[in-house]
Image (tube, rainbow, N blue to C red):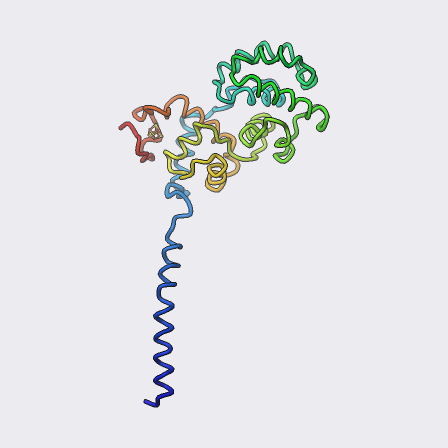
Length: 249
Ligand code: SF4
């Protein structure tokens, strides 16, 4: 073989050797699962059907007559049960019927009135701040877009999704509270712990027209069956679809 051809062939071999590791590295990266493996569309559809069966009428358990009351109740519900919030708002909404009344409330009086819900100083600031902003910037109406509602003091995505979804029927996202965080991990619909990331995962696997109901159903399921400690798996209609490590059967 002429020496020029020999040199060319050995150069090609050297190049092939160099390329091989890069190929295997690419294969390793591609093998990483992008989503939790429980997000196969058929499995997700089966979970949704079971939730519809168990909780066809799931809805928000915070008492309210309009979007503004729901906003205030949701702010008060942080680190507090809905039952306790409902006890407090029953008298609160009679004394303060609208945004104007809350905006001009006496802060120390209001603090004492919402004290049973916990974190009352911060919650008073949020309730009064949000009410003022609603009056000054939005003509006394709770805004209807995620972008606008997030400008209100004390309002983050969870509260925004509750209000937009439940009061206005706008599927802006998926409410991720402690129940949704726990149960969607147990059901392998996400493998994230951060609520923002969980919400993004769920928005990819749950059809948009189910976002509002799905949140309520999972919250109901968390309160009634799939509790943090000792979930009642024997009574759970999702049991055949669930392979959570902490299942009790
Ligand atoms: S089987 Fe148990 S862990 Fe799984 S969703 Fe049902 S209650 Fe929760």
